[in-house]
Picture: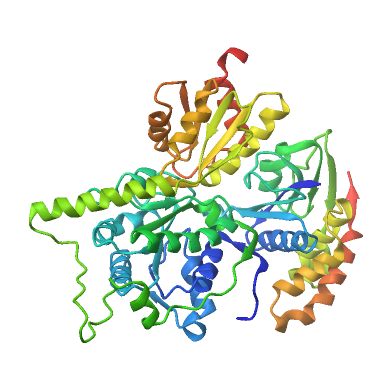
Length: 366
Length: 180
């Protein structure tokens, strides 16, 4: 199996994440099962990477334990990850805040389900605020990637590790039940070897792998009692976030060049909206679609630029309207911004989006 | 070419597997494919369903509200999906236990008694392959050779001796079609 290079497979989004994790040289996965993402750990357990690459796969006693195991492994400069779904993610927020403050790289996957509370197991996007507005305490940010296909589940696993290590910051893959459960064609990347401890020491001198003779002590902590020092930590984090905002904005556009109306949607909802855009275009309505790929940093400039040329924006989400705030901030009153969403695990149908486009935005033409 | 398909029936009838085989066959034929199951509570006791899309181009929404072809294996599925078939599309159903037959005039309706055939011939587990054989005769969206290639790729080697039996079921199913 290790000799296979790029290969085409039909697999679920959750399975693609597990395969990609092993292939990108992940050192450890720590998780706790919850629908609709349990196939991530199930697939890892089936593939038994501890026998091939030496990657650790461990079912922890809870989500709180999982994220703290990730904290420990990340402190050693290891590629560590966890995954969960909405209620489990709530339990991880304290750990994420600690990891962000300690400036450690790790990858966290949230395959969102309907909430609040224990909610439903059906797809949702109502964890947007939690993901990009700071689900835990303090001024911190997670680099947040929103995949819209099984291929992106695999690709973004690699990308998330890359960005996490580049900025020494946790990276979040914010998916939903559709992308986790659906099967599509996926091209898997070739295997990369895990890094040896010598390589980690060379590449990540901050890693706490045990102090060698003559080496200075590395301290990883999120505790800093002196407010002046804590402010300096915060200013350093803020400077880093500005860098991330400058360098890492990613988005995709469809039919935006001549668009009079713009739909903004992320993840699987963007796929549903794409179908609505196709229908609208068939009827001669000039609609474009902008799909933010990074939810933090957010493609505000692109949205402002494209929306500013048109007559209005429709934001579509599987929530009561959370990303809507960021779209409104980006557009800043230049054109009307309307919203359509379904809640609690209901996936909007393409014709519902098209109807919303006509009734909420193109009012004069109805 | 683009075919948007819904397959629905009781849990245990092989609805999800039929969809998976169809999707895999599409992959073998260089199509873009998507397979989106209803993974929620409806799987337990009620109807299981899966949306399968095969296309020459990149697939947009994996979730649909209308379909080209519906493969419906029980009464609740007929009740739920008959009205969601595009005009000119196809409804293919198994007659077992059906009390209210589909009656739309603007679609093609086919009855395939796969459950009965499977029971009489003592091949209950082949029901979904019989049905798939009929479907591919009516809508030849993938070639049988690619279905077999897909089976070979998805089944573990210890089950490869069952492939000829599946091939026979596909052929037998194609003979069971009754157009209404």
